[in-house]
Amino acid sequence: MIGLPVLSTQSVDFSPETSVFMGHPSHKGLNRRQLVAAVGAGSALVATGALAFSRTNVPRWDLQVDVLVAGSGVAGACAAIESKTAGASVLMVEALSVPGGSSALSGGVVYAGGGTSLQRALKVQDSPEAMFQFLTRAGSPNPPQKKMQLYCEQSPAHFDWLVAQGVPYTDKLTTAKGLPMGDESLYYSGTELAWPARELAVPAPRGHVPGVMGMNGGRTLMKALLGQLKRLGVELRTQVVSQQLIVENDGRVSGIVVDEGGERKYLGARRGVVLACGGFIHNQAMLEQHAPHLARCSAPWGGAGDLGQGINMGIGAGAAALRMNEGFAVAPIYPPENAIFGILVNAAGQRFIGEDAYHAVIGHAIAYEQQGRAWLVTDQRSSYSEPQDNFPLAAQGSTIGSIAEQLALPSGALQNTVAYYNRFAGKGQDPMYRKSKTFLRPIQGPPYKAWEVSVDGAFFPAHTLGGLATTPDGEVISSFDELIPGLYAAGRNTAGIPMAPYIASGLSVGDASFFGRRAGKAAAQNR
Image 1 (cartoon, one colour):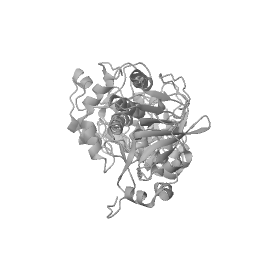
Image 2 (cartoon, helix red, strand yellow; image 1 turned 90 degrees about the vertical axis):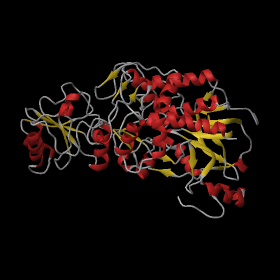
Image 3 (cartoon, helix red, strand yellow; image 1 turned 180 degrees about the horizontal axis):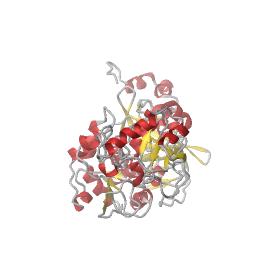
Image 4 (cartoon, rainbow, N blue to C red; image 1 turned 30 degrees about the vertical axis):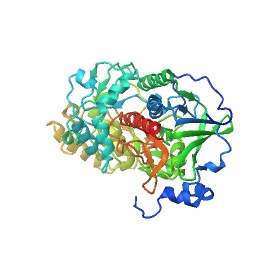
């Protein structure tokens, strides 16, 4: 260890608690790294971006380790575990006072399949091929197929790794829609059973959630991972804010400039820096610039540290950023499941999606395709029977016409929509969106109600998915399609396998944990 005294030691509780809620062409001749080396230290800062800090301006190293991990969510924790296991000295820094990041606030779901030990124990038939077909066919075009293939093939082994870290799962399956509130650990966490996904790939339950009661999966997951870090002897320091990457004259990233208690300090990484600082859902300026559809959503969903700092630090060092407009927006119309018997309509009074779709697929359709406006129309049997504050009551009446008038919908539009829907629903059919027969029956029987399911008028959680371009090993790729030596990233600092529409709960945590592991291992092996 080189340099002046290290950062002041703080006593860190590794048990996460709920924190404040809620943000390439080919080139001949010199490559990017050679160009930076050629122009020398004076231009290195300019060449790598305003947010990078030239190594020539570092007066000292306050601390040096082999691998420096910024962020303590699931991506950072998994990266740190693998780096330490590979024999590297590791320091993890966290901007907030409590570790765990957005992962600790989540349901803790990991989307895994292909025949995991839990699937096999519950007699669930699945294959890597079926999982790959779902991920590549049911979502956006041009998915990152190499990453997805690797994720699907190694999904069973990755689940076993999580179990080995102490994450608890139960041999229990539920077929109810939505995150289990009991101690079940396996469920259909996405849109697998809804049309058109069920015709594109063989459905299977792939949502693996810690077997604990209530919305405590994320805390349970992070408690296990952070506990493993403590057992391994990995040092975690909180309230250390990462500000800029330190870049050598040849373009290699060698550390981070941080702020601790108002004092600037310089942390060096002999082998690599892993950025795992989360997304940017709490950075309103970045949202308005990159993801304006998400900026309108009423509930920014993530830890208070999701400010985009890791993404901006990477861009400052020359990294490419991908799919920055993408994210997930959630319209949780269920539970209760009886609400799915209603119909979702847009400002034209027309249906636009099957109501049995995964709630993030519904949310995407509203936020990105319906100008953020929609209503759930219910009858006596499909209405919310218990008080709820997710969706305000927008209209109520004894006829569909009165509902349409109160919503100021085009004349006759909603009546025609309901009439067409009822005509076929009575036969157990839905020609437009092929809603499952399980949730299909005519809309009839007053009182009729319309519930507001708009991005700014209802409970509409949102989170970002765009970020830095990386290889499957977490190596950060520059805007010149070259690797940035010494720089790695994972989780929502990157554009990984989750894309918009977000087709299943657990894709984000699954991606962050799996590719966080690979980034940590690659950084430790970088000599």
